[in-house]
Amino acid sequence: MQHWDKLQTFIFQDMDVRGQITTLSLSHNAILAQGGYPPNVAIIFGEFLAAAALLSATLKYSGRVILQAKGSGPLTTIMAECSSDGGLRGIIRGNLERCTELAGLLDFFGSATLAITIEPDEGERYQGIVPLEGSHLSKCLEYYFDKSEQLPTKIKLASSANGAAGILVQQLPDTSNNEKITSDWHRVTALLNTLGADEQLSRAHNDQLYLLFHEHQLRLFDPKLLRFQCTCSRPRTERALFSLGLPEVSSMHQERGVVEVTCQFCNTQYRFDEDHIRAIFNAHKTPLH
Ligand SMILES: [Zn+2]
Image (cartoon, rainbow, N blue to C red; front, side, top):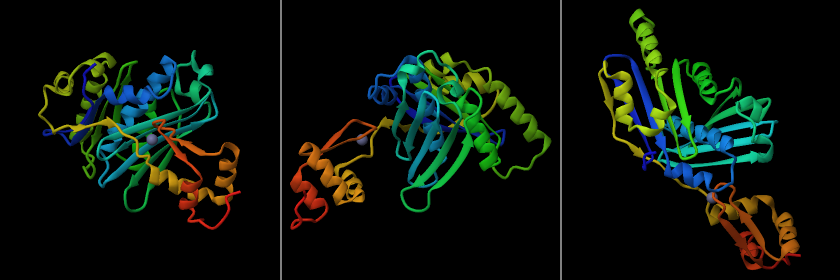
């Protein structure tokens, strides 16, 4: 596995097609180190992280892409987030002990949905929801692009115990539907189908692209570096406590003598004693209990 994590955009100069390619190792390992996941759960988690990285390339503004699968099977939630500046994080929720023999998405999740959320730092968030059907996340995402943007899209994700990778190709918007575009698209997707997961996980981006598309003119842009980065902070945690309300937080404090909040994404622990809680609620004169 390569010891860098990056996302690169490429465009074909002889076809109306663009793409993204990503490889994750250190960020993937740091995120998976937060939980003791069975190998098959780690594989599927890696695919979600690689997919979030690929989709982050479509962000037009500063913000983040959040992929969230919710189901009723042994796994209830997988969430993977990638920000426009390359910060990745994710969580898994469910009964991991019941997952050890499973392989397909439906086995893990049962009946489930996949929400794709685009969250700009400023402005309205956009969310598309598609059923989590079939055995591969890539197929659900291709369906999402087809429905939400009417852009033919092909995605290949690869994941191992040590890393994850992904490649996405997509027709350019506003291209007229002529014969050349149709035959170009068939050619690109047929070539992409020849890419093996081992090659995705072991070869540099330009090697993978050369292997696939050496008969075409292609421009590969500078990489964006990716890393594990949680967006939690003490002020954000204070705001979350404030939104719970003083009675609720007082009773949490009464139970244990201190309020401890652990971030689900990075396990950072924030502790609040009585003075902190009074400050959050500006409740200097009010007795807590
Ligand atoms: Zn955190």
